[in-house]
Length: 330
Ligand SMILES: [Zn+2]
Image 1 (cartoon, helix red, strand yellow):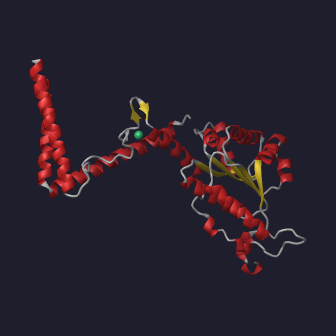
Image 2 (image 1 turned 60 degrees about the horizontal axis):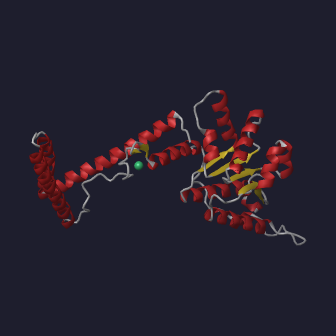
């Protein structure tokens, strides 16, 4: 995946900050240990002297003599390092406590390894791009635990049809299981129904859990997301929105139908929904529209994909935001 210069710059900043932090921590630790244990400092100074000695030996012209001295130096050096480690362990420290603790020990937080980009930097680029996109989303505001089924009526079922609470209870459990078992084989979901029935709450709860599992999740409202795409396309704003939306592990599009629609936004939406289906990457869409509304507003090619390739979850009940304002109506 390609990233914009801005993302690369931000990720590089973070990488450099990681390296500086690890090195600063190590030098603070060294100073503290050497202050408490001058013996450790003495051994460490001998090790430093050995590296100066190495430079001197390299200037010896006579090959055999040079090799003899180098071998002796190496033995001495290994012995000193062993002594230092042993000493530190006896003082209750980890043997390598004087070394920087890098976030990534493979590349020592340089981001490259054997001339190639290290995986840690690839991950950092990805995370930076997702963070940019999710900035405006209230990802940590909702969880399954604070979803209250008491807001749904238990008495509105009749003639054998289920009450709102019974229907919502099974949707709630379905969503919990969806988050628990999330994988790249998870189905796509369409959450639909009137405003204030808990669609955003449950989709945010799924997002939170799936992120905790380490998946790359993007959550955004449809108006926001189409505005970003529009800006990148027509105002030449720099960004990776389209690539990132197509590539993330789980995409959650909130409030489909509330976006400003024109030919461009509709075809951009189609492109994202369709590409994700082809790449077998799960998508969750929530909307206040009903099925007929979706068919009315969007071209057949979008509507048939959403309706045909998504699990449909119909939310029922009365607007919770209204009920919360006037608790007596509950
Ligand atoms: Zn690395």
